[in-house]
Length: 286
Image (cartoon, rainbow, N blue to C red):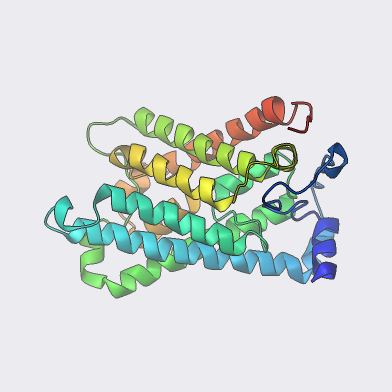
């Protein structure tokens, strides 16, 4: 196990654990070392089993994410009223809860991205190589397509009638409204990811226990509460792509660009903010 972790570090995977030891264990300023940036290109990763293992983890996590969340959305739309179903709050909990569980399960394998926007933001911050970023995004999209496809297999008749979980800008909102909602929502998510997994912050604030998947899942929950009425909440291009491909109607594809452009802009803004504002702060142990 130790050899695998050493190999991952050498090849530019995850330079630090997603979570630090909890509690008030003695730490000094020497406990924190600025992580070196991941190389832009790392061909050596292609010969490493840890590289493919991480991609498989991203595929499976995104598959399960789409399977559970789209089934929840279908159950909501199939009900006669919101009161007889989980409601919007239940859908938001399904998305946030699944992210919490899946990030917890995969953080030590792939970093628990489960979202091309998260991968893109971490790539811009030089947390992983371009080789790994592209591989993750491809595996995330394939997992999302398969997850949505399995849901359609269970609900062949109702699936098309109930919207297939596809993201669309809702009536009463413009495409600009939808784009803005996706940018801000993804910013909240990716900024939370950076904050929850930042090695400097965890070393400095060691007296504050934190389980990284919890704030990340909670951020997803809150963003869904706010933006489900606007776009159905994308903030994850793989999730939007998987549902659009399986649902495959003009309405889903007309607005689909919003669910790539918005999240990528939001992730880029979060990466820049984190690098300029947060990472530039001097390290002082609390």
